Length: 91
Image (cartoon, rainbow, N blue to C red; front, side, top):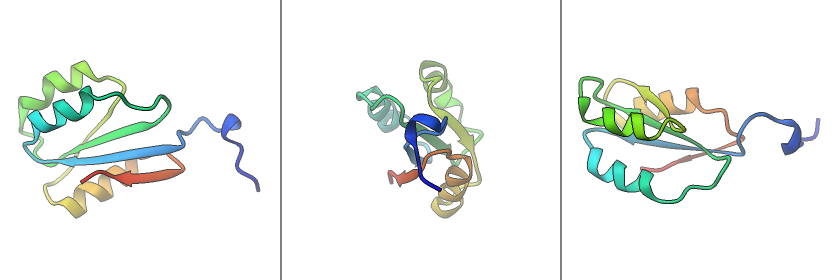
């Protein structure tokens, strides 16, 4: 079976970003230009943290996942949600 990007609805790259009370840094990161077609998955390790709500509204193109705190758990949740052929964990 050959991979044909034009036939796949999945993105080529999924960027997984685990965060824990990192609203300011995440806001700066998401304000930077991103390649069209890449999937971004932000995994929040503190679902009670409401400071991310404005970023969620401002970036509807980002997949937002809540997971238990802990980088390993957050990365696993992000990878499970990712649809890309390749996965990059931005830690």
